[in-house]
Length: 319
Image 1 (cartoon, rainbow, N blue to C red):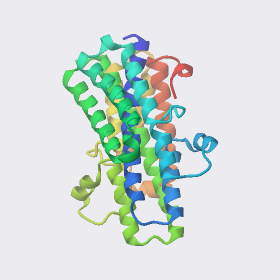
Image 2 (cartoon, rainbow, N blue to C red; image 1 turned 45 degrees about the horizontal axis):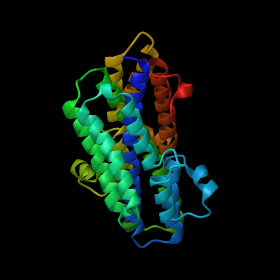
Image 3 (cartoon, rainbow, N blue to C red; image 1 turned 180 degrees about the horizontal axis):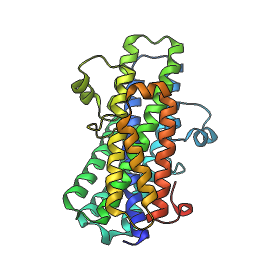
Image 4 (cartoon, one colour; image 1 turned 135 degrees about the horizontal axis):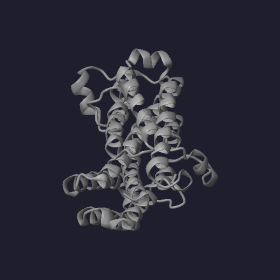
C-alpha cells in the first residue's frame, strides 16, 4: 500500500475516534455540571477537559474566563481549535475523500453524511438548546461509521490501518482521561468532597468510556478510584482499557509489518507484556500519574514509529 493512502486512512480513523472521545467527555461533564456544586469545583472540572486535550493554552489566549458554554463551543464548533469536533469531522471527511477508492461506497457516504449533517445541526442551534442531544448524535455516528467499516470492508491492509488509527487514538485518550481526572480528584479533596460526591465523580469517569455497567458486573461493589484505574488500565476484556488497545495495536502491526517496522513492533509488544505483567499494586507503588505519564510517552513513540515506518514523514503528520 502507498504510504500516502495508508496515511489518509490512519488519520481518518484517528479523527473519527477523537470526535467520539471529545463528545463523550463533554457530555459527561455537562451532565455533571447540572448537579449542585461550588463554582470552584465546576471550573476545575471544565478546565480538566482542556488539559486532557492539551488545549488550555489555546483556550486562554482567546477567552477571559472558564464557563460551560465557552468550553463547549470551543471544543465543538470553534474552527480555530484543531481538535474541536467540527474540525475533526471535517479532517476525517477530507482524508476519506482523498482515498475514496480504498474504501467501500457505504463507508465514504457515512463519513461524508456525518460531516454535512453536523454542519446543519450547528447552524440550526442544536448545540445551544440541546447539547447532550448533539453529543449523543456524534457518538452514534462514530458507532455507525465503525459498524459500516466492520461490515463492508475487506480485511486487507486498508482495513488494518483504519483500525490501527482507532486503537492508538483510543489508548491515548483513555490514558489522558484517567490521568487528568485522577489528579483533579486529588485536588477536589481540598473542597472536602463527601463520599456521595466521590461516587458521582468516579461514576462519571466510567460513563465517559461506557464502563459503568462493566464495572458493576466486574466488581459488584462500591466504586473506588483503584478499581476504576484497574478496569481502565489492566482489564483486557474492557474494550477501552490500555491493555486491550495496545493488544490490538500489536496485532495490527504484526499484520502490516514491513522491512523497517521491527523496532516499532518490538516496542509495542514490550508495552503489552509490561501491561499484562502489571498489577494495581505495582501501578500504585509507582504512582498512577507517573505510570500514565510513562505510558503516554511510550504510546506516542509507537505513534511516531508508525508514521516513520508506514506513513508520511513525521514532519508532515497532522497534530
